Image (cartoon, rainbow over all chains, first blue to last red; front, side, top):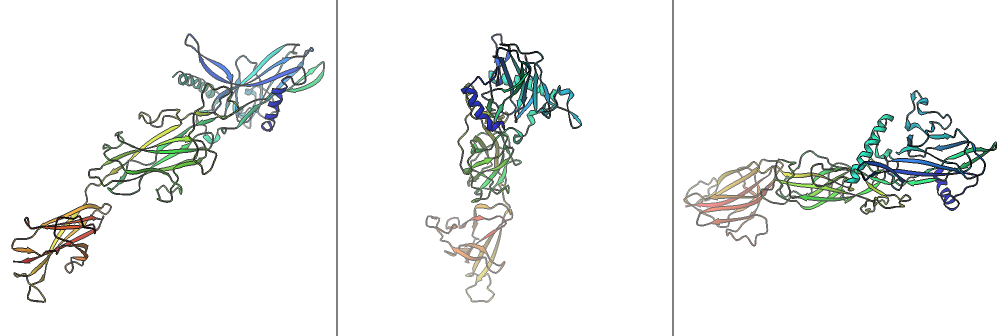
Length: 150
Length: 379
């Protein structure tokens, strides 16, 4: 579904970045690129995922901004985990999402089960964030989760 | 070096996290990996309310294309060197190439003869085969079939699939030849077109920007030969080693000599060995080693005292019935040592000074025998 829609959506996004509505949400995929700092320590920088092969860690990121004049209440971000990708963990600096293994019941991973066994990160099919407080006009934020390319 | 180290660190971090989740990605089969060229799109749907009115929107779509993680193995699929004989044609060693890439691809085959001794076998490399080439085992019978196994590259090998490859050559007729080392150098090449040899894959520049819409080539292959210097990790190439061994350098060759009086000059039906009688000597060469031919077999026999060699009496050929005929359909040989005009593959001569007959009977096949006859007259 997404695959067939993809090019179209991408074109739209490129041509008209401001979709209708006050809430603008931008999705990005970032890859972890190790960097050596001047003092010799290693840090991991995030770059757009130009190169990704099976086994690579990628970060799916949503940045959002209320471009309207009214506060937005009950904001829920529902992000199905794309095919070919396995959920791993909340990304550093991001609120932890609720996850689901069926797209219906969302909870923390510990509270979910698949059949008779506890759910694993591999089982996650959907990631969801709910903003606890209304998003004030002009306010923005970032949500992200770590995944690995299968 | 910098890149390698940092990758190792990153992977170590992944491993630590992954073990917590109970997943071992390193062991993922190639066919279970997301295929190269798969486009991964991420889009989130968002719901919210503005002054109590429900609204929905969607995020932009973030996309990337899964790149080609080129990985494969090449191993020697036999134990020890192949046992061969001098002069043997189409001798082969067997290798196995397995595609661990997240996509189907071709592999180029580059057979090589090594003049260095790798210490893989007990002896040193001291000969080369001629006509070195590599073929894919097209009919998967594990044996090189000349004329059947003709593919010189591996075509469209699917993820996790393997192909058997033979390195083929002809053993020269070189005395003292014992070991010939060889190796199969395998190079990853582009797949996608059946029956067409793909171009060698080139790793995409790591610093190239804006490559997220294309399938990059990322080499992930290991160093296939460990401590040996024929391969390094992450180069899209692999190498494995094997060799040929001329194990049998001796055959059980025996010669039996017999004599028979042909005529005594008196026309006796049962001729006796009296002066003037013609005696035929028969030299029977037997090769008791069934698997190996003896080449360049030469017989030398001095005629007895008080006998005279009968000129032009040397004959070489298939042994006849024991005690009746020495040679069946034997060749007629001249007595001179000048063999330039000889065409039948065997030569012979009589040396009047040493009074010796020399018969070069050529090749005695494994388990076969050849006979040579000559006559003398009793003085």
